[in-house]
Image 1: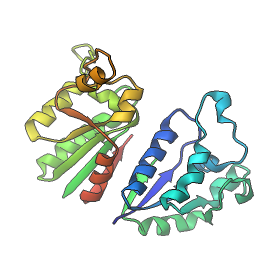
Image 2: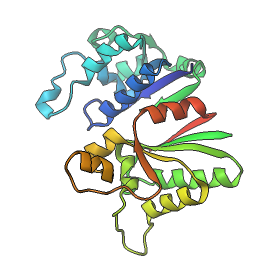
Image 3: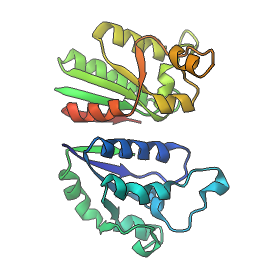
Image 4: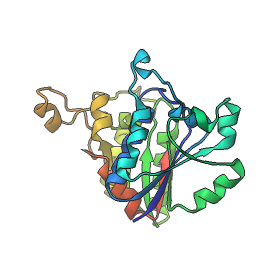
Amino acid sequence: MKHLLFVLRKPVHSGVYVQETLDIVLTTAAFDQSVSILLLDDGVFHLKNNQNPDCVGMKDTASIFKALEIYDVNDVYVEIESLQERGLTCGDLCLPVNSLYRKNIAELMKRFDVLVPG
Amino acid sequence: MKFAVQVNASPYQSNAGHAAYRFITGALAAGHEIFRVFFYHDGIYHAFKYASPPDDELQFSSQWSDLARRYQVDLVVCISAAQRRGLLCSDESKRQGKLDNDLAEGFRISGLGQLVEATLVADRFIVFG
């Protein structure tokens, strides 16, 4: 088993990109690998509460995040500075997350066998 | 060393696909193994057989086909990303009652499991685009 960290940095609902990236996350988890997610930069918007994606013809990707637990994806990390720079706090997110400071990101990444950008 | 490569950008969106091609030919020349190249997101546009750029431009899909022929590199296009964008191989289009046969030589269409397998088997996994 490998430990994979998906690093999501793009804003939510920017085309089908996020949805397709989450398909990789789910497939990897279904192959019984250890999967974690790190939200950086605009990626923190993925978990923002009160999204209305149907208004712009997009899928509700936040609900896919909420379903990750079923696939044993339990570790979602969020960079505190990315939240702060966008006026968000962990309280604005629809899932409990592990928040960590930018200075600790490199250390987190070192714990994984494979990093997947998304 | 054994590499797995993922290509996410279309040929005209950025030069990431060409960078991947250059990386792969360089790695092969240096004696490394390319376990698989997986085309995902808009990267699937590299596999369109009938892309017809002007003669003085890069012929990206035939370049990949040559690579597969010369080095037996496994070029895999994600089926769901491909279908979403209208890239169908002849088998799949028959199944759907359509007439397309869009897949360039040397590519094959398969699922995301092929990408996961590649990340597990390879020593290094590199994503372009």
